[in-house]
Picture: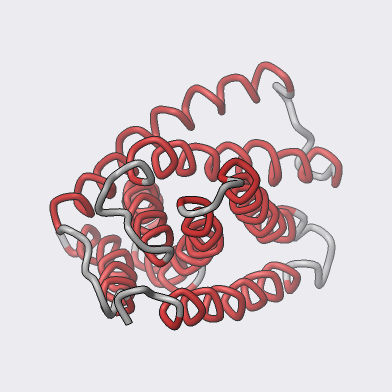
Length: 223
């Protein structure tokens, strides 16, 4: 039970944070819950299928091969996970009438992402224990939130644009870029000093995510 609480706490903290940031027109709680649930169920299902396809294409990656780790970071992790979340936001949340301002792209993307992150975090924490729980609370969970905010920012723009596909794909591409970069530097930790690149990537993502939140808050039609 303690491990479940530790695995859940950072996810709940992110959800509360982003819900508070939705200042002017709160989203229906049931719709947010369904987005979270789909993130937990559908994203894992989609990811499992895509991970299998990756294993077929690159069945025995060399852990000390930088190119293999690049493919793993940007294809198996970045593309697979972010595309899984994107599909749910794009075809479940974005068409909803309650998705009625650009900031909603951020909040729904974060809810889907936290559903995904919750399941993933429970698995890691129950396997690795308290140390892993605290480490992921400070790294992986905020990272998932940052990638979602960046993607959701552009998906919020897309909803009200005549160029929906362009803005949606920009959001997806940037999420993949930041996610892939973050994991790539962690995966090549066999090269001394390169792990710092993950925290630089995460730091840059946090700065952009904060700006994205502020821009959509300021431009809210309910402000």
